[in-house]
Image 1 (cartoon, rainbow, N blue to C red):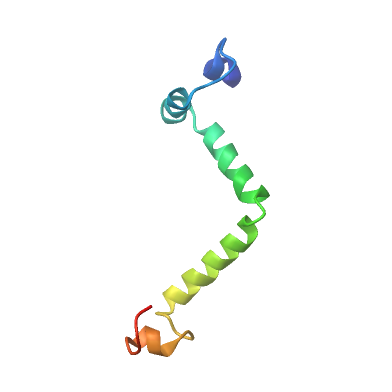
Image 2 (image 1 turned 90 degrees about the vertical axis):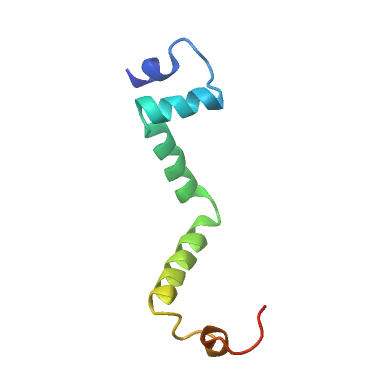
Length: 77
């Protein structure tokens, strides 16, 4: 069983042991934590939507945004 393999007789893992388990044995714990954070954090829905929109904007070369800042004219902020 995976729990017996990871924890053995321990009740807790310190960070060094957690890191060793994820690098050497299995990364299922890490993936589960990341999935939980991605789906349950209140800001995650907006973050991923904004990231997707940013990726689209950057992929177009910045078209449709502030043309003075994109063309190099104007002052730096």
